[in-house]
Image 1 (cartoon, rainbow, N blue to C red):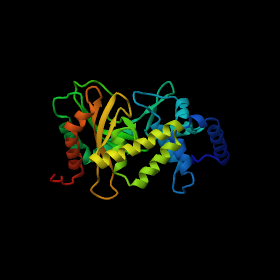
Image 2 (cartoon, one colour; image 1 turned 180 degrees about the vertical axis):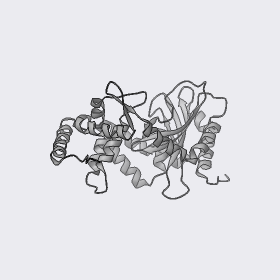
Image 3 (tube, rainbow, N blue to C red; image 1 turned 135 degrees about the vertical axis):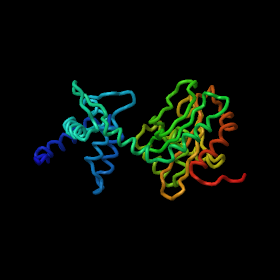
Image 4 (cartoon, helix red, strand yellow; image 1 turned 90 degrees about the vertical axis):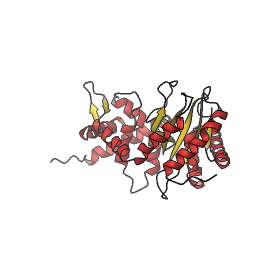
Length: 297
């Protein structure tokens, strides 16, 4: 089998290209590029693997195919590097190149995703709990189970009535960590030092006027959780959305942390109704999912 290792001069040229690209694209760098820079001093961190995953993460919902240029823009990587990565990902079945030269996600990515979901007993239990949480006279309430990914929460399971008013509430949707109720609930399941560390990371990656809003979000989460055992977000993420959420605390220390939210459009789900009618159900749902006994009171 021929040796596919690039010659030293090619690697050096690529490194130089990356340096030039980083200097000229500082204002449009993705969070992933910043993460690569942060990890560059870690001898155990495999940068090439992280770059390959960055290509896969560049695809957004409702996008079928992307050209190399768009992939380079979204990842902050030079085109030469993106070309090598897309070639390798095609060989692995994670990308497929169409007749026009654009790339789409391949079956290899779907196999990885379904493998994760299939191994989660929590997912099947969550479907029943979310359906029970949404049961009642209000067809316009929705619920979801989510897990943190960087500065967002990804929906793993969702439930809403087919007759509900349409909104972005679907499997794989991402919501912000500090402004959404489900993000705040996940923060409350973390040690306070880790909450502060995540806040520092978020503030470094955002504009100064947004920094104080992030801090207020964490403070609101702590206040709500201390008072109610769940977190709220009433028009703080999107002004038309109200929601409450609570963490699913892992039974074993160090286990994965999830959270459940319930809510919807504010004019159909006012604050008092969510707190009065759905908060008790929410707390019972997360206790059931965590496999912990409910308190008698």
